[in-house]
Figure 1 (cartoon, rainbow, N blue to C red):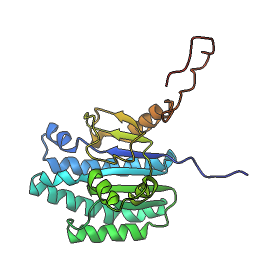
Figure 2 (cartoon, one colour; figure 1 turned 180 degrees about the horizontal axis):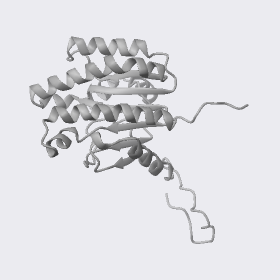
Figure 3 (cartoon, rainbow, N blue to C red; figure 1 turned 120 degrees about the horizontal axis):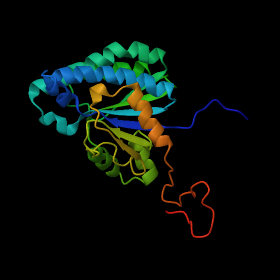
Figure 4 (cartoon, one colour; figure 1 turned 90 degrees about the vertical axis):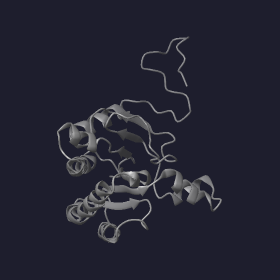
Length: 236
């Protein structure tokens, strides 16, 4: 029986480099975050076009509360504005929004915008867009493990699936407490490109690189094409 369902593909992105992008141009750091919001719009559209089924974006970590209060306030306002303004076209585009992370420390206006966005887009089926705000993977795992769950139940409690491709922009090569459990077998793609300059072309390049790789999940890798003679055994 034929089906129109596409294979599931979960891409996660650590959107790094906004502040450094702005500073390199003599602009205040908030200008970098505003430019980064434009990249979010472009990459979400590209994800739908490339038939990505889930896209998780690291917008604000638990550790980001340590930043200057004015920068944090600006980020909170930008996130609220994004959710309020973008919901109509995301809904029409078939995108479902979910927010990961704590909500008890968020400004009331942002918490309300999150609730509205989730309710308004809950029927989206083309792409599940998760935005991590005040998020810590360690905290999420500890909270789920406190109930002595099985691995399967813990994964369900975390409210996301395994990551296939983890992208980090801005040059750093670390997870920074983002989706630790879900990234156990993720493929990683690191780029020097800062997030405001990361657009559809860069996203397509990351997907092409991912799709060129062979994933064995701890098993034996298939032999490369043409290497079938004795002595050319596949590597694990």
